[in-house]
Amino acid sequence: GGHKSGGKNSKESSKGPPKETSSAPHLPQHVLQAVLDQFDALAPDGKLTKSVLQAELKKALAKRHEAPFGLFDDPRHPGCPRAIAEAGAGGAANITGSDGTSGAAWAVRALVTGKEIEANFSAKGGPAALTGSWNGSAIRWADGNVWTIRSSPAPGCASAVAVSA
Image (cartoon, rainbow, N blue to C red; front, side, top):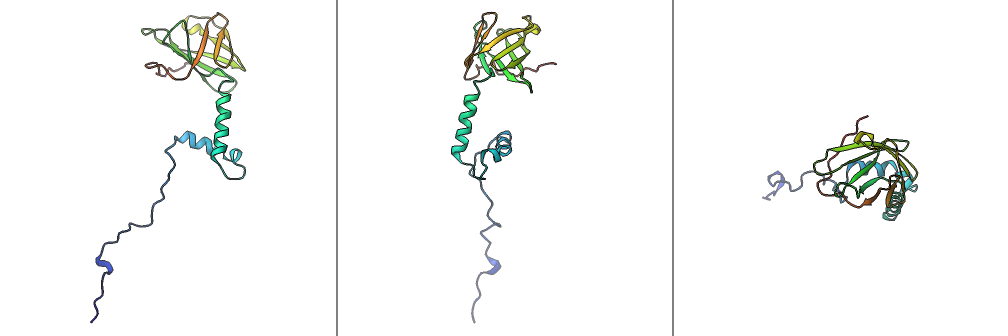
């Protein structure tokens, strides 16, 4: 007689269907959502290419200098950068900073209109309506101070400050 081999005696080497693996990096959810939200505009033909994304990034980088948002150096308070961030629609912005190693952090409101900014520094003892002009790399304030944009945060100055209404 013939000898039957195998069958259920040998363990199966496969554990079900192969799982899909993605070679894409683990991108933050907000990045993926932004691409998904803009997919039809970015790729009307349904094909999103690297060159399309590079062109959009180039436009975004150029646009970032159109309004005074980012981190700035204030020569009147060396080592204590100021952060200006959008705070909703209509040009509303928040400015945060501190005035020295022992100085408390502060936050004030501002309004950005095109290349102009008006800030209410009264919460920190300054003027209630200081205006400034943005030139793409610096804000020239009406009081003569000039804040220049910086490319990265200063060490130890990255703590967030809540802005009260």
